[in-house]
Length: 572
Ligand code: ATP
Ligand code: MG
Image 1 (spheres, rainbow, N blue to C red):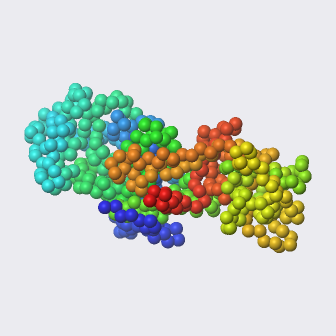
Image 2: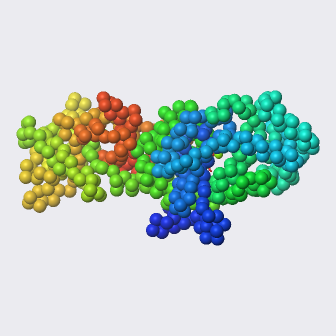
Image 3: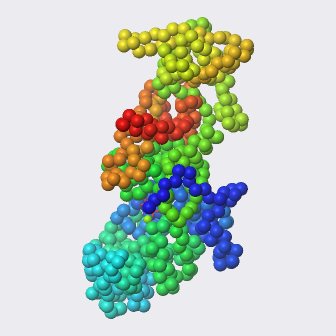
């Protein structure tokens, strides 16, 4: 059972030093001189884009290499040409780099080892530890037995070595169709571990491989390729997720029985699961191909490229993986804790600008018609080094529709007839009149300002409770804002059978006609900015100079639980 944790279990992070059970093992191996330096690897299969779960594995493997002055290899586990593509290889490299890691010269492909792996397969045949089987995939499954019953030997298990060897060579030469034959290890069909019941080592796949082209039509399985690739690269600690724990005896069987150049060890940790999020490549691929999202980098996707496009800083993602830590038991982390890391990071580092999403025009009656004043505004109140900027102020500007109420409840401290309010960085203003259209909607608000209050404070020290933001009408730029919500409405999407039933129909809201402070025109893509009082935003890659588009990265506060609560109240 998955245990639900709201406060993710922290690693011991001591003065920047992280400690967990894997790092403890490595520390011990180094201290006892069992190894002289640590080599880890991150082994993605290039059949999709990387997601936040992969980020956990990347930060672990590359992080360990950095901390212990070792190295981490990037190895593409490219053993299934029917699903793998060059575009995924390129995207994975971009994502690992963006996360802040560097493999240097240590870029490898399992396909580089195909010849060596083939030789080792022949070695096993010659040692009477592997055989060619003619059973079909379905028959192999039937013969395998169950968790409670032993399997049965294949009728082809007793094939003589020479016959196995020539059949295997014919498999390589392309004599057979897909699925006609496989090579299997000869271990033990009665083993209590199903992975040891004569696992398949090679299958026939007539498909063009992104790197080896048509050179091969037989491909090694993950289990036969992975440990041996680790051994070739002299990986010291081969770290993978818990579902491979039962494969470890097989991993060790190959390492023991083959003349490999080193003896790596496998260690397992719990994979990351996040609430309201799907982290299975197969499901993510389905969302893309069936167009529930616009692509792998849709800002609603939990992919590294989706988060990047949405405006999440890579530092926040690394901080998140450090905080959730590494453990041996499966748990689901609340997506809010990732969002909290993003907010914390941006609150510290993002520059501030003003923007109005739902504009209402305000006119200051007593402000000179053609005057434009320059006011000082802080770029980031949390960072003195961020400095200040000049913003222009004039007689007409926009405020949020929500910041005005003609007939407000008691605790409304924003703009309302007769009460003074502060315009951020500008003046104290008081509403004097409201203009409405035929439908009785407010179209404009008239105010007066106190010229003695430039910068937003009164010389007589009188108190003003509310402060609202604004954008000058004469220089405002128009933009579209894309506001995102969780892609799924259920905490554990697909729990009730069909994942697609749990898709949130309101995960994207487009707001057009937004008014932005003028220098956001030149905001670089990839920089996330706080729009004061609204949240964090960044320019989207679809944006052009004529049609600006900003993604809302995240709001200033977490409102999901509250909204969920409101909905429940409405439903009941
Ligand atoms: P998926 O199950 O989403 O298809 P995968 O494990 O098949 O993912 P790989 O490309 O083989 O994808 O993964 C590369 C590495 O990333 C593996 O070592 C795997 O253990 C690790 N990894 C994948 N998903 C997660 C996760 N959710 N949490 C932590 N590590 C993960
Ligand atoms: Mg995998």
